[in-house]
Image 1 (cartoon, one colour):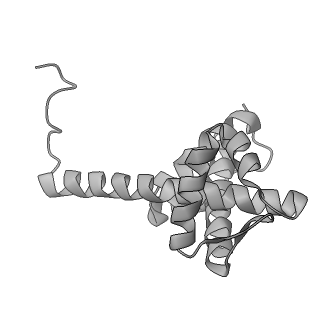
Image 2 (image 1 turned 180 degrees about the vertical axis):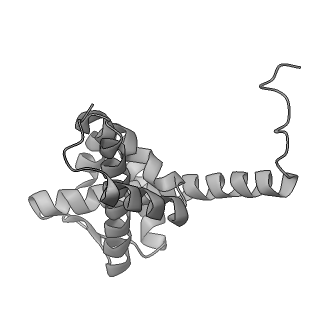
Length: 153
């Protein structure tokens, strides 16, 4: 058995199981957050978000977007209007803002560590969905204490 195959020493099974549960939960909400955040950006830039634009920005096929938009509508996060595109509900706007705020905290944290702004922006996409509120708060505290003139990347 290689070291990578060995069970984590000293970590109780319950703690490992909870970690896996949290990761699965984060993956479930990650797509919803990415979609509503993108829809909010498209609306801010052009007044509406069209399915074709969402597909192009995410690099996926339009039927994939249609399926996800149906799910988001069922969850009460978006409304689709024939010939008008997709719009966020109040709950969708709230989720988009929370996702954007988490993204900003992670991105600022990575920059405070010396990661280049371009890499921090890219890397923070996804990380924000997988950190706990406790970790996110620690990142924010660290960033607030970090010197503002620290060298970047």
